[in-house]
Each structure stands twice: as structure tokens, then as C-alpha cells.
Image (cartoon, rainbow, N blue to C red):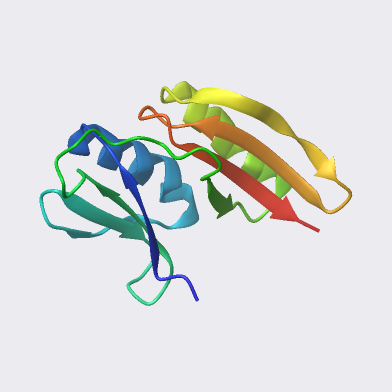
Length: 122
């Protein structure tokens, strides 16, 4: 149902490097790069993350209530990917932990301020 989600950045090289390195353990890579926008994912037929310099050339701003959610595949991967994000310059928005009986997650903000979570259901 979701083709891709787009987030803005002021620094394409930094954003691409951050997300490709962070999501590489999940099999992701840059699939398409068109200067001001790049698509990162595991395949063109799978949901992707796009990072872009906004088309209107105004500053990108993270939306209040907007969040990227990445399925990590296991609680151990949630912990590892969260730690990797923090090591790469992300800021903490909620350390790994069980939020409800079937949801384990870890929240962070990327270097541009976009909020994200790695999670495991079940």
C-alpha cells in the first residue's frame, strides 16, 4: 500500500550516507538517485524511503506527529539499529523497550530532526 515516504534534508550527501549505512543491515541501499532526491530500499517493488531537498527550495522541516517506522525483524535488531543510529549522530527520543505487550521499539531523530522508530511486533 505504501510506495515510498519522503523526508527533507539540507544535506543530501549526509542524509544518503546516514540512511544507507543505518538501513544496510536490513538489506537497503540507494535504488535511485536523481540529485535532489534519492530512494533507499530493498527493491523498487517494496516500500522505500526518499530523502530530498524540498522542491520549493525552502528549508525542510520535520512535521509534528510525523514519524518513520522501520520493522527491525527482532528485538535484538531494534537494540542494534538504535545504537547504530545514536553512534551515527542521531539523538535519542526513547531508548529500546516494550511500549505495550506486543510492541517493542526504540525512537530517535536523524541529523535533520526527523523522528523515527525501529520496532518489533509480537
